Image (tube, rainbow, N blue to C red; front, side):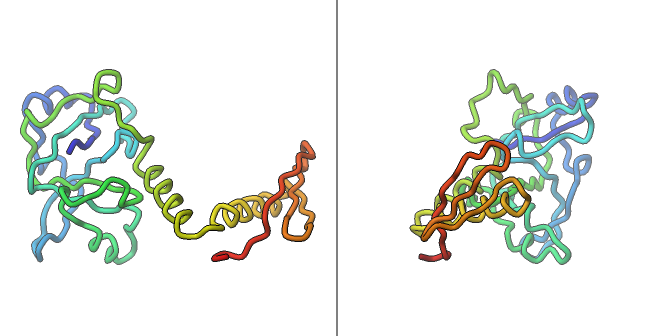
Length: 196
């Protein structure tokens, strides 16, 4: 498993040559098996995060076996209970399971496990971001479960647009006709109740 981490440009060459020391990158303390464990966050996709400085360099890290976990940053909240429950060993994570996954590395990373990320030369990443993969997966899963889901989604979207004044609505039997206020284009959407 490869993950991505932004490092300051002034430290990038030293990190690539000498490794990445856990204590210098510490971003979180998590609880693993009732033990407080230091870690630093990395990303599962190059577009999932950004550096603190504009010139930060993105490096690619081979995840150390048994020393990394994945958590869902979208569950960070007041108490952290849902976030803490989301922490699983990295080798158990299935792509697209979390909305905002982060990989938590709990050890120093050796130089042979780090390289500069080069989007032109590295293997392609076949999805745009972890969050988009999650959203698309959830959308398709729900669509498979509920036959009318696409109609419900379209209805909700165009009603939202109508509420903001972008469309006018006329009802015609089982359909709602949304008329674009600017172009007069008409879009017919099935009036739905979720679950039908």
